[in-house]
Image (cartoon, rainbow, N blue to C red; front, side, top):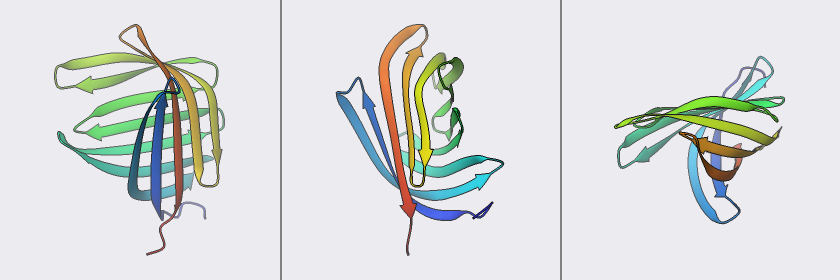
Length: 135
């Protein structure tokens, strides 16, 4: 399956401090390249379309969003990583501290502490499940 893109159905579940949960189901593409796995998908928001790329490799991950929302969130296991979140009224500095980064067939699981502009916003649990889209 090296370097071949596979259409997938993706479920993104984000839980903040084990309380607030947001879920999203989208269709996208999955591929592997250079020892990393990639998921690409688009979501349509009120502000416009957001393109998201999730890259995961052993002990590190990266979420890139472009379009209506621009965000760069890097993750490295047990290390603080600096990222950015761009909004119409300015760019915020973000910090992530990954406590868990797991990737297996059909699952990307990232548990991290998130800080924006120096204020801790909570512990986030990102669970992305995906399966081949049998059309």
